[in-house]
Length: 135
View 1 (cartoon, rainbow, N blue to C red):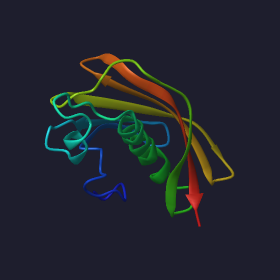
View 2 (view 1 turned 135 degrees about the vertical axis):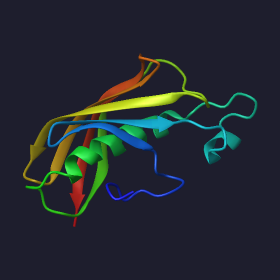
View 3 (view 1 turned 90 degrees about the vertical axis):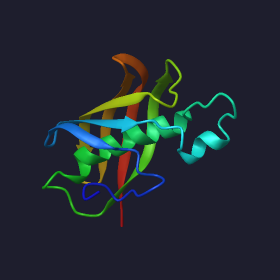
View 4 (view 1 turned 45 degrees about the vertical axis):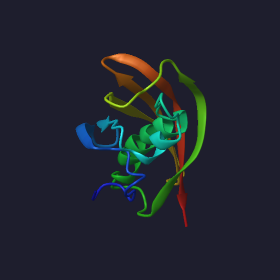
């Protein structure tokens, strides 16, 4: 809770399991049937929306960017995605393991990370995510 500004129902990181300052982070998101998106996505066949998988990856990437001591403090927001691909559905009961690795920081305002989300070691989503510091 102290590392990211997100709160329920949009906090999509349950636990950080590995962190290398300025380099990478790995975190867990436990997918549970009582999450609000499953009421309508889809009744009788709940699937985690792809945009929320990408948002979870962005939150893990944000852990890397926001914890870098040489960057200005402030709100880094999701600014773009490149090459995101979904490989299999994510359903209640799954545990997402999300790993992100820093690719670059530009002008101390823009960051780019490579992210992967896996369930039981199988890739479910991958891509590059960009962040921007909001004044």
